[in-house]
Length: 227
Length: 102
Image (cartoon, rainbow over all chains, first blue to last red; front, side, top):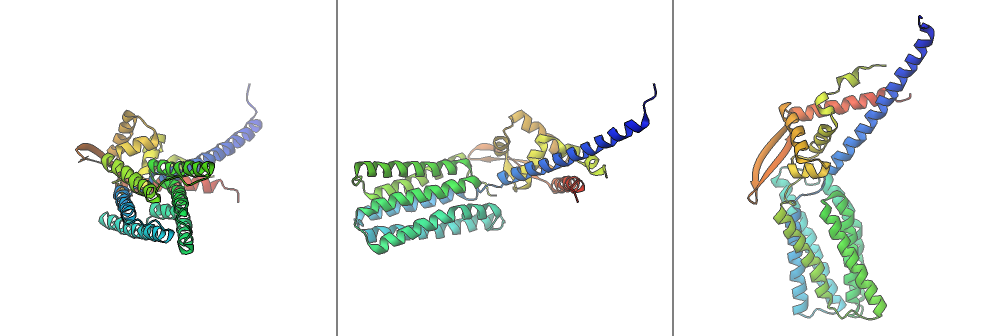
């Protein structure tokens, strides 16, 4: 039996249209996958190990200075740690710039920009809080509260930056947040001071944890590749 | 409708695994074998096969060195690899554009 040519033509045309739409959908999905993979590839790895080691060393040094000279008043505590933060940020920028120059890459690369954008809001909020506490020269007991709030803000910043950096950064952020929350809750439940020197706390988090993560990156070599 | 763009797609890059490798390398100057393997959740053997295929086409350059006394294999896109990848993307964009309702 001869097939009816008229009835065959219409389904064939419809099929062609369907194939074209499928091709288009497939191409769009592929482009999206490529974009996602490219974004995932361009994570921030520039000088991460030296940055962590630098921040950790300064953190430990600041804690030792604070404990040695008994800088326990809010004004002295705030000034010491805000000053340390400014030096760390300036040093971090210099280290990053040096690494970019060495690798013949632009300093303000897309991964650097994304990490900076993620870190900035909590860092600025923390610094602002520090200036307010220090300026008001609150009682010495508030240094612990300020230290815990700084740990919390910094953890949030690290966690946000972790979306554009190796997985460990996000974990580090989580550990800052979790520890700060536990200590804040413990202080609230006991309704008293934690009997801890704020300098010890700052030294442990901003010195010890940075040094530990920096050493891990350095030994595993994961913080050395530039992007 | 023009059927050409789909037929022009580079068959070497078109394979899913190789396309993923090319996409990752296109966004970084170089990536280590381990970084690629972990990011793409591929087995060592699978990744080696795909990289070899791309290397044979001249799209990927592989460098072997040592870091902390451990062997380090790094991959990067060659100039022709970058060009082929850009052409592949352009073709995909053309396919999408062609079928976009006007």
